[in-house]
Length: 359
Figure 1 (cartoon, one colour):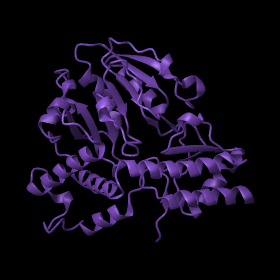
Figure 2 (cartoon, helix red, strand yellow):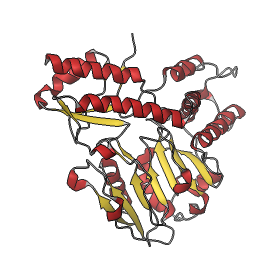
Figure 3 (spheres, rainbow, N blue to C red):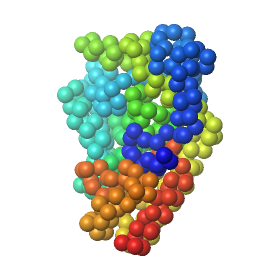
Figure 4 (cartoon, rainbow, N blue to C red):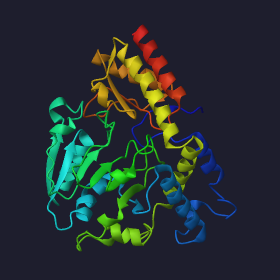
């Protein structure tokens, strides 16, 4: 059976070379006589995998020495609650920017632990833009400012790092980490789920500046305490070992492609092609403000909604899968993360043009 082009928002496509290596090493990792899935997380073999994983992520993102890198469980969604519990300290307020469904959920989950101030919101525009930073109302007595750099559902992405007015800047980078360079020094904390640009589901990366550790409430369990996890190399409990291994393979692949800057250029080219095809069509439309269109998640709607089902059925028959938009917004969505080859985008564009011609 030939492989499809998987446009899922996550879990997403993995590079084929990574899958081939994982297949070849499944029963016997580097002559150990066992699978990574069978290894003790305390053993020397897995220790080498863990050390390489952190070293490669630090190199790719140029993470400074005064930041700790954690590999946790529970997905980015778990961090929505853990972040205020870890960062508030003796403060009671935190600022949030609401630009889509995920940042909206982040605010909701933070409210039991702090006064979650909405410093800016694009809800009135149905989350199709990002409010001008000059209009943001940031409380400088808050513990931090949180934003979501890319909204997978609405297809809105920040193109610059916002000014946090001196507050520690916290960012959910789940859907665009490693897709473009960022200056880690500008952030207090970065977090991201692994299942879009970094590997298989099961790992949540937290990159946190050391001076923000040690503020966690004593009633928070140790496994949810960043400082405790940092002291224990993210192994207070048994980690998702095979997902760590797969992430390590993906990071090696990103390095082999030329690193994050090279990935950015490819992502720019892929997104530009797809948006051009949408913008020059009479059938397809993207509602997002041109300045904030996502390179990772491209939503589009058909002028005739009654054609949606036929479009999806024909696309799947053509080997173009997972194009249905999120249930909250409808329409279509093509997620074109790092591992989506340009040939996949070309195939999608050709299909869209043929579908429009013959509908």
